Length: 265
Ligand SMILES: Nc1ncnc2c1ncn2[C@@H]1O[C@H](COP(=O)(O)OP(=O)(O)OP(=O)(O)O)[C@@H](O)[C@H]1O
Image (cartoon, rainbow, N blue to C red; front, side):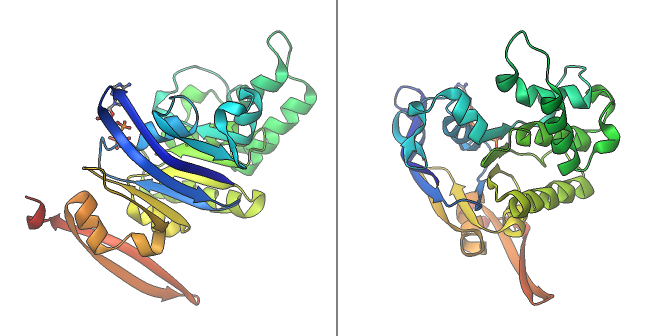
């Protein structure tokens, strides 16, 4: 459904950020992108969204290369959720979510009752109806992240791309975001691509993972296979301990960082 094929990118000539990265996702699958700071995760997401042009390789949506799509169609089908910390405008929650309808509303028109109904439905889906008329300046970071998620789903996209949506949130809000992603995936069959610093969030979300590391390291596969003590040492230079347990017939895995690996020093 969406795939990256042999993708390479450089900001400066002959300084590759990533090289020949490939992965593919079916409809309704999740991809977690993991790797140390500065390795190129955000850059890869920018290339995926077409905000940066690849040096070589391509991104295909339903087998068609992104530049072949009219931007309006592409951005209706593939929606991006930025990190909440970058939002500074004093819009109400409803107006912020309506911004997601901007491409359908037209430059000089007012939102129709249909646009407003869609915005309210998106607000309901993420569970923040009580904030509808609040200013986005007067809500918490976790609540703002939910507003941005409502804005991203207002056009009923097929793919949701999120750049570290849980990074500045406390434990409860992190779990709220993960629960919401799981619910949206179930209810809307959304394909989810998430850039995260938390291997445990990738394990919790399940599906696929892409590991990016230094010296052109890269691995793609099932999150539950890929995330293990050996890979955490190789990619993050940290010794870790995987813990597994059974709950309601379901096997769970979480990985705990123990110390900086001696092998890496
Ligand atoms: N606009 C830019 N121009 C030049 N170099 C850039 C630009 N943006 C990022 N870089 C560099 O590209 C590399 C990858 O950056 P990127 O932000 O993609 O990494 P990341 O894995 O998302 O990092 P983090 O986990 O810290 O968010 C870094 O070395 C960064 O300094």
